[in-house]
Amino acid sequence: MTKIKLLNRDALLGTIFVFMFMGLLQASNVQIEIVNVFEQVFENFQLTDIYYSKLRDSKKEHFEKDIVLVNIGTLDRKGIAKQIARLASEKPKVMGIDATFVGPRPKDPAGDFMLAQALRMMGDSFVLATMPDEWNPGISKFDTLRMPYAPFVASTDHAHVFTGILTDEDFTTWRDFPVYVDIKNGQKEYALSVKIAEKFNPEKTAKFLKRGNQVEPIYFKGNYDKFIKLDVNDLNDPDRDFSFVKDKIVLMGYMGDGYTDKHWDDDKFFTPLNSNLVGRGYPDMFGVVVHANIISMILNETYIDMMPDWLSYFLAFIVCYVNAVLFMWIVENQKLAVWYNAITKSIQLVEAIIILFMTMLLFGSFGYHANFTLLFFVILLSGDLIEIFSEILLRLFRGVRNKWKK
Image (cartoon, rainbow, N blue to C red; front, side):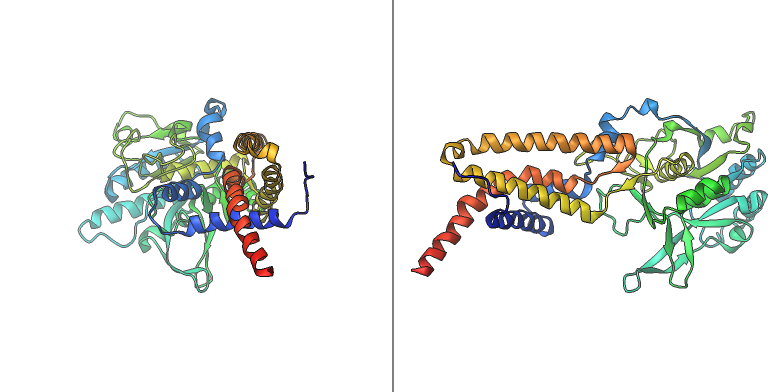
């Protein structure tokens, strides 16, 4: 029985073959079912999704008492103005809205006037939404920033509601957000959630910003069930008491015709909380609820620290190389070669379980996102690909080389 060679040129070539195969598979436009499934899983699935949707006890996530979600439904500006005026009279500490009010409504000047008046009740403590426009890849900045109608923003503050997703892919999952975006004119526009958190608790927001990340992963506390929420009909009730919003954050936005709406909406997104891990069925969270989760993360300091990409690739390469050394050793030993599939599949299973356990442990206990997704797929594919490389490609290469020498 031959000895295992830790420094093995063939194992290195086999490792490179595995990574080349995965790269070509991901970049391929060939419409093959297994390729399409792999691409969808690789691009839209992370191991931490299992923690969020299957392992975490959501009951242990405390209810967020400082954030009140308000559904604006399909109300026009006049209806939204009435909501703002009624809630502002109860003196919340901060109000914000995940809706853009670009330009006037010539057919409804009264609605514009009422909205401007309602916004003045909160003044700088109200944050309106802006949207960066026209991404310029040459300078890695946006050319313009779509601002609210001038009378609305005259007395209020503003911040962006850009998701960080430039494409409209159906299965894009919202996992992180841009803390700020850079505009061509030199302006730096912070996120709506960051600006609201800063007005509510400047110290904790300053601590968050000291992390120095332009893009931050989102820790998802939960869906709207973790927040105080008011529907359109609640605010239409003249006898309803809203004194509980005093000194709280009031975050307004679209949450369907009713916040229990289960339909597919333009402002509803896939998140790691989605119960379908692969091939997601329906979006599970409205945009305003995502913003509420970000605010909660900042205020409760439940940040997520990300493993750098270089470390993710390095670990995947090292494990793949070790597997290649071991699997090629098995191929070269006749007594073990007949059991190749059974042995390698057992090793892969143990490795996958260890990786899954480490991912859940680090994320659930330490808030560290060890991005082992690439490593996980390397483990799953390495057994068969190393066998193909050893039994077919390597033998062909050796045969051609021997003939050439003769």
